[in-house]
Length: 154
Image (cartoon, rainbow, N blue to C red):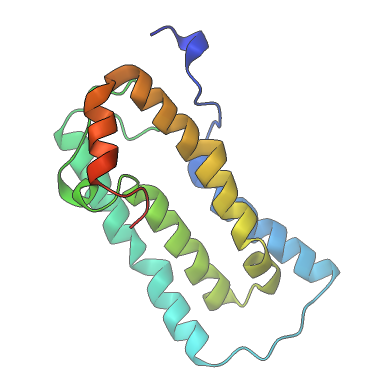
């Protein structure tokens, strides 16, 4: 497949959640939303901020073991169906969304909570849909079958 037909365009998908946080923080500085955040939000947020790294590292190690690039714009060599990819087609994006929610709770980012849906939609339609289209083009029916067996998120 030549690179001009590759639908993957976003240069750095992992940058979407931090951009949502920064935008939320900036909006909060301009137009604060005063909420009474319960104490437990920092504890849960801290856990959700740290724990997803285990999932992301597991996915990256699984990719490397199969000699396929972790970079979402890289030249994919195989369909990885082991490790966390048995449970979700997108463990790294799942970990990013959990991390994003953790950051909202940990840092009390009310505007970033409002931006949760746009951040999700940017990942889902701006990145994942294009990656899936690319993988269908590269691998055909074996990838379609994998999609039938394993959910996109969880």
